[in-house]
Image (cartoon, rainbow, N blue to C red; front, side, top):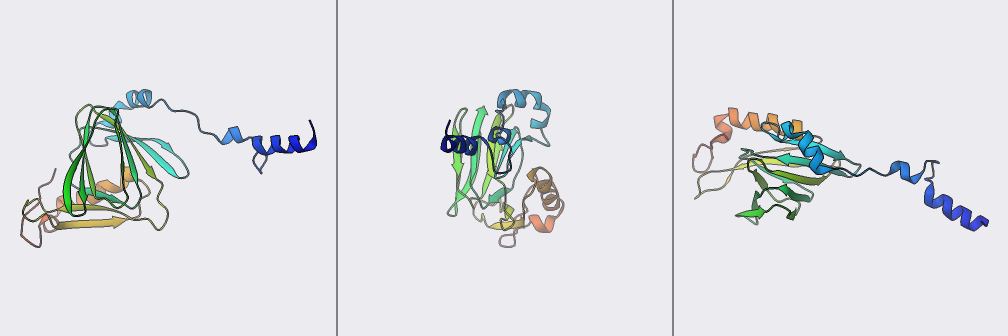
Length: 194
């Protein structure tokens, strides 16, 4: 083997720090097996577990049923895939409230900055892929007035997302515990909890 071929081989198989490229590759994941093994985490109140955390991507397995009334806003895209059963993704698209049904085996890419409320039914399993948030990214939880003739924003709270599993709960609890936060300033409707 001449020196040129040896250098090419070394570049393909070694990083600049001397480690083999294969050492940095991630193993495959058995999503069905992990879902079965962690089935208890797919039930309320948790409903999800982290399958994979990469440098740029987070992969979560999410189960149902859930009873959230908030809409999540993420500045980056989210990818939804249903392993088992169907789910409904309630979205606000240019001011219009719509339902997007994602069936078993189907996937959907949600554009960034789209308010969404994933409605998950009993015994369903889905995968959600999100970008790891950079320091300038902000997420929000938002509640809209339940009065169908109003639908204005009742309350929203923005935060830098580092761990959805722990950060959502205190915001939701704060909203549910405070009637003033749940009361629409425009029409006076009191939003229900769960």
